[in-house]
Length: 262
Image 1 (cartoon, one colour):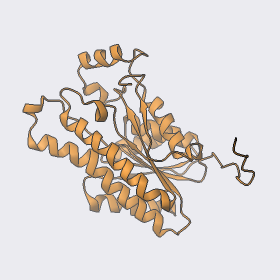
Image 2 (image 1 turned 45 degrees about the vertical axis):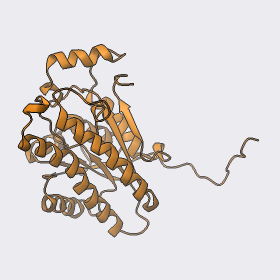
Image 3 (image 1 turned 120 degrees about the horizontal axis):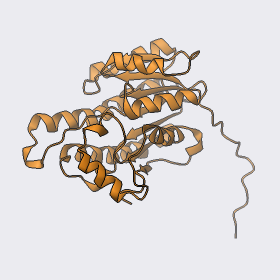
């Protein structure tokens, strides 16, 4: 028997107007594109990046009339993260309720030639950084009151599932992001904070430009769409996952790959 319609549910508000969104790695690439799309949808942006000038440049690309802010943050350092979160709350008058963990680095080298420092930097930025920023974000949001609601999207990668030659540290860190996303999703859903992640393939960004051309060609050859992705194509999915349009999605890992790895 078909379930009867629930006439008590109200239609959720899909607008992001009035929401404060913190984006790490907002100074370039996918992070910058996320800032632009979120601002287009009405959110007030806190553009966070280790390069403050790059974050400030992102501000110039956002709609005028909205009071966006830029903050410096080193996601590897808890004190820097907590200082950035406090600056965001002080400048915006309230804590962010939306978070995009996009700060990331990579290093291309064969597995046997990857040294300790290169490995550790990737793990520190790509994985520990998400741990530290998410903790600070959630604590700040929950301190604002028991009725606080939030949403988090972590930028992982399809190579976190498939692996990739010359990218052992990056692949491992992104696999960790997928697992961390699911764990946080399970714990934070009861606190009205949804956590999801996206898994892009190679995207046409400054980081993507570091990948050898032969790897680009391999990705394009194996992707049914036959091309690299654009930053805004990832940002649109991120924005959907932060909005109430995805209100029943928790712990999801959405692939944005042109079909690569499916």
